[in-house]
Picture 1 (cartoon, one colour):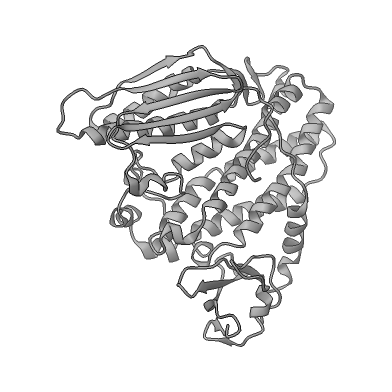
Picture 2 (picture 1 turned 120 degrees about the horizontal axis):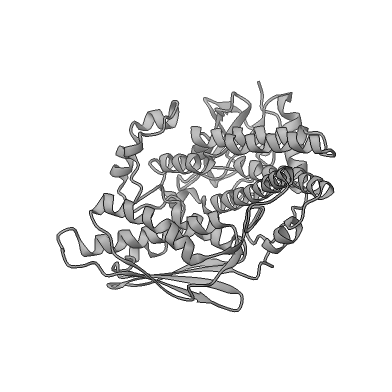
Length: 449
């Protein structure tokens, strides 16, 4: 079947529409690009999405993949193309912690329905933007089975939400909440699936040549935002149904979330991982404003603190070596209450970050493991890239190393409501990680949605 027109899918560095390229003859899976000297070749291939799309893969003269576009090949996706574009153009409505708290303190039937309608209106807008961004991925990424799986999940959720009738009764709200819970369950593996897909792709193309950091940052920040909306509504719905909310919480927001108690909660798991891997672990000392609390979502804080602690534990153990039986220097966590933020400074004596890694620690998929080690961990490359990829057995994934998503994802969590995560290192000595959490609660979701 001949190719028709291109959907929205930007070609990196080129202002011409993809449809212009399609006017040239197709030869053995390639099309001529004589009028575009920038391109080396343009490969057409059917997507793995049950033949629903075809993909244009554009490669620059240097061999690195430019960004492609999904081409509509039949009338089956008229609805999908137009509707996704229309929803992606609409304005999203960022929220703040204060708004979540103020709205959810008291619940009534009318407020619960307002919450449901807001979520029902907002989720498709955010999902549409992510579907658009996935349509502009490089060929090797778009063809990876893990990425196509995520796109199917998002497409299914988008179509479900768009097809739902307005929530205007309590009975409709209960059905809406049931479907939201199912969507959460259906997509709970999105992040590890994307991480695994990126890991497979980087065995063929170096991470820095794929230029995917902006894609992953917007993908994960949007996911965090959608989960906050969904889980906040589900918590409010449960509280209304039961006639009382969980003590100390407004929805999923903890009114007095303690960074020190968060440290106490995640430290045993981080230390256990360290002991299992290295046979020992340094002491963790907490100092400063230990009574500080703020209104925050505890799960987000726990993720950030755990990842930073895990990195510090690993750095100290590796810097002082398995044969050095001297006591390991402690990791010190200083808690500071400021005018607008609560800051945690996590200081280790792990030797600092080497120069060759310094600018890469926030790159998605970055790992200090060698390519050979990553190949062994993934198993058969052809199975992962071309066949039905199966998750490796539990002991194949080293929890002290992960998939290169821990630190960049932690920074997204920290920045989500106006905080930040910064790294300062002294070569030969150690590293300080500063984690800031905004305690005023008046900062909107601050990353691209």
